[in-house]
Length: 358
Image (cartoon, rainbow, N blue to C red):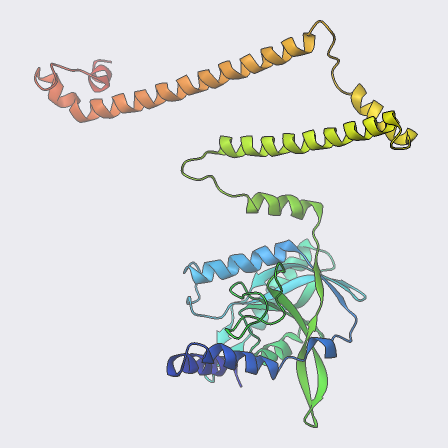
């Protein structure tokens, strides 16, 4: 069954019966092409999934669903996985969307020239990187996915299939949620294909592959910057910055209290002294500014605090002055001509009149 035929049958069951018939049929179709988890995964390959690939897939899905792509909003989301492989260790580092075509019989046609061009571009930037498979977005594996998987063997003899299920509820209930998705886990599954005997006939089936999330230091920083919440209407970036500083100071206070509890336990004999740890604490204390009995440290802190307040007040006054100037110019542009004749607002000659005199 082709991809287009599978989707058409799902739509027919949705409109012709109850709301639970379509998900149940999709789950039954998935069981016909996916082997049980405990019975498969004999290749021994270990897959590491990087956040950049997930962010790219989510961005692709969002653009299609909101109408920001050339594809219709109801079209299926397909793409190519990119990464490196070293023996049995596989790292999926990136992904890019696939501009596929639909044939007359409803099957998916992958343009080889487009994939080869993207492969060359990615390979020029990332040495040793290659096509690792393909991805899709949905709740269930479709029977037509085997045809797409066979087509991907042109670039990788043993490709992977990543299925991201953003709308799936944990557990795989009867309402159509993706199976194998547990509470608190990423709603994604990775498959590879194996040859198994089904009713005495050799058949290619999808087999779940365990994967783990991993990220380099640069990826962690980038992802943290991306997932930061934008300021609300009643908040500003200053408020968000203050919240971050407040949480950092709270964490610092908690660590200092832990060090103090350790030192008190050592002093009272409740904990054995660790010379190496005590030297580290001493080095940490030596890096702090000395606060003598004269209160020089407190005076310097108070001075810095007052300077910060003065800068804040000056910034507020400058902002208010700029807003007042804008309002004055708009008022002059609206009533300047009427006021030049002596009528209107008592002969007001605002900024517009002043500019005319200059």
